[in-house]
Image (tube, rainbow, N blue to C red):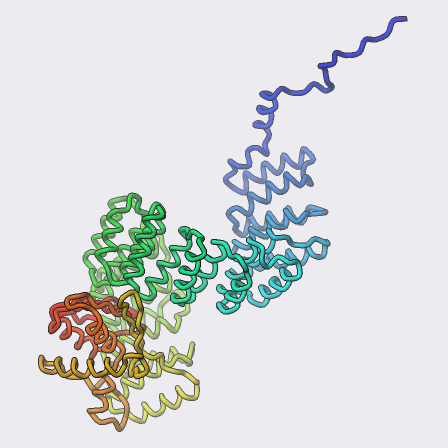
Length: 602
């Protein structure tokens, strides 16, 4: 009886594709086009194929579609990602993490928290990849209460010391203004990594606490961890805040030794640091030696020239930037407007202000508006500045009005100052400096009833005046002085030296401007003593005592330098043949041979 022979052993059913044909088939598969997808419209075309081929609930396919939507999230793409998520009967935690990551970078980050509630109701628990996105979402929205709830949840799940979770916990607290809580989180980590150190150093730097940031940097180095580009960016920022040039130079050498100067952002931060520490020459040198110069690098150099009062150089740098076909950004024009403001170039300032929007398509922001108010105010065009603020397309902030109030003080226009301060008080009546500015103006005009009223209002609101503070770096140590300081460890010696210095200045024409002291019932001698111990003078005297003859003295002040200290510094530079570089809250003053780089226009 005949029997059917079996098929050959090498034959399978259905026949398998060889590697070449399988690869070609995969390449023709529409899902393989996802990496080349450039719009939501194209994505939906690929999604239509998934529907036709019954892949609408396939986890891998949906993940790929959602991942595209969350790469560069906007309202439309995130709405589509949410729709895809909602259509899955049983989503997993991986899909949740993908959508959550998109929300954390979108305009409405707290939607990630709403999604978390739904996931929890489905019986799923977040993992170590979930918390970084959730915490980032709370940080972006400055939602401290929700962030604390997540922190508690992470504690329950034992994830607070996870290498991904702990840095984002630290970032949450620093972004929400609670640096102490961030430090407590950091202190509980037994063996912090570079990313964790970066998080806390960044938090301190952004919170204007540079000393703590630099202390942690030294601790990081002692632990044998190697700082990366993120670390040095924040350390350079801290040096700039302190005006610590010597430390900044050491960091720059470290950057070069570690090869971190290959990063354009690091070089840009070095330029900014040198400029803010008063060494414009070093900033120029770094810029000129950069192989690649992007918009941020050009902008940093323009801003450097502007802050040091070199308006023509800032403008010529911008022209060179345009010739190099590098597109300017909002920071570029901020530098140009600063430059015009510090030199009284009103027409040029208006030209740059309108060009940024009409020629380059850059919408002006609050800082650009502030520069224009400053430009007009310094030039004495107070009515134009007032109208400029009134006609803005946005609601004016207290800072804009304060800029004008400062100009009113400079030009001694009490009537305008009273109008301006009423606008300020409607927005914020707790800032002590506002009361002080108008009170001083009224005192100089002999309007003591107004002075008494303002001081009473100031007291009732609990507003306090920010004390003048100046710092100087000597032998790698930053020394701080406050106006009227008598607590400093060398104050007795310093005050004696300052007393002698003032007597020498009087011999060459220095006359204390006691009109700046507006306290009632104070005689001329007491007013003179009050002026004598301003923080700028204390810092300059300390520099004269503790640095070699001929060495540049660099001082950083937290407020605007007063007129009397400005006059005294010019004479000190002449008598002692010293170059004094003073950075105040608005600009740099270079005193040399009895003159100031500002040309007394400040």
